[in-house]
Every structure is written in C-alpha cells, then in structure tokens.
Length: 302
Image (tube, rainbow, N blue to C red; front, side, top):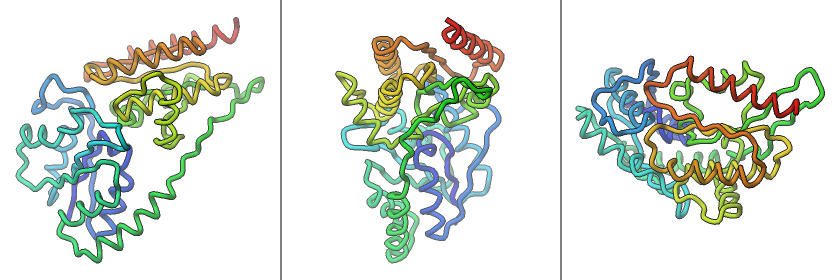
C-alpha cells in the first residue's frame, strides 16, 4: 500500500519512527515537499504550521497514494497535552479538503505500543506482522538516547562563535520552510544553535517543572521552558536566545512571556522573539538576525 505521510507538525517529533514502522509492515511511504505557503482551503485564523500541514496534504493527494497517514496526537507524555488545533487537525483536514481516499488517524497519547497496534490494524496487517514490527520498534525507540550536552565553545581561538538557544515548537524550529532556513542564516553570522533535539523530552519536562513555579500545560511549552532552564544552568556557554513562534499561536501567547521573564530574571541574556507567518520576508528576517548578532558582539566587547 502506498501511504502518504504529511510532513508537518509532529512529524518532526516522531516521523522517523512512523516511517520505519510502516515500512516494516511492508508499505511504501511517500512525503511531499512544498515551495509556497498558499493554501486557500484552510481557515485564515489557523497558524502557519497548520496551513502548511493542509498544503502538504493537498500535495500528497496528487501523488497517487492509497491512503493519508495523519495521527491524532493528543499528548506526548503524562499530563502534557498538545495544542487544540493539533488535536483537531484531522477534522479540519476532512472538512477543508474532503479527501476522496481513506485517512489513517490512529490516536497517540504517549503510549507507543498501543499506537503501533492501532496503526497496523487500521491498515489491515496480520496480527503476527504487527506484533513483530512493534517489538522491533520498541527496541529502536529505547535506543533514541539524547545527547544531553551543549556544544563546546572555543573562546580565544580563530574559530570563535556565538552559541544561541533556539526556542519554540519543534515543528517550527526544525522545519526549514516555515523558519526560512534560519539555522543556515545564523551560521553565516557565525552563530551556532542549541535546540530541544539535544535533550530527552522527559528531561526537558522535569527541568521546566523544577525551574518554573508553574510548568506550561502544553508539551511544546515544556520543551521550550525546559530548554531555557537547562541553558540557564550552563549560562556561561549560552550567549543569547531566539524564540520562534507562529503568528496567532495561542499557547505561545502564554509561554513566550513566561520564558522571557525567566531568562531576564536569571541572567538578562539577549532575547529576541521572531513571529512567523506566510507574509514574513527573507530581507526582514536577515535584518533582525544581523542586528541580534551585532548585539551579541557588543556585549562581548563591553
């Protein structure tokens, strides 16, 4: 069976595991690359990642797939839920795109074994095939050990660079189309980044709970707050913070001020919020990044 996997939202958290599991069950998996953010079938009130998700689904529907794989991600850990728009994304897709093919939308609430079983049964695979694939995937999942360390700076050498903590939802920080390849732009300015990918989600959640009086309700907020807390614990290595957010994001309207206040109270390191939508220009982004790099340089000279 040819399955289209939508490259967006929690694909950047679990996409590699989804691909491997479906391939172990003998299915062909395809993804689509998009080159513009126009999506007229999605409500204007949605954030950019949700609009891109719709656009990606539209591209897949034109690729001759047999079904569309779009898991219903409710929560990634105990007592830590995803955004309401993420939870309801499949209902939005069904209403907006009215796909003529079947949508496979297994529910995920932090328990991989149950999720894999639901996926295999929905695809009509044999129970023995599913059991074997699940056993192999659980071994792979346990082997996904995070580095839990920050890159070492080389102060005083010709290879000096600034180290900046790049905060935000993983599906914004890791999607080079949404963030306009910000990591490459920062690298040209001699800035390296630290992201939540370096750390285990449970570790980041516990760091947020231990450092903030009220840990964020949403999992993406806990990742950002936890990363800020970990980075502040190693503040001598971190030169500044950039928070990437999607315009109109409800959870970030709480999380960004909370994280900004925490950083200001702890170290007062430079902090810049970048709000992204389909109208964000490359020139405007470059100007802000260059100004931020100048500010980092001024602090070193002072």
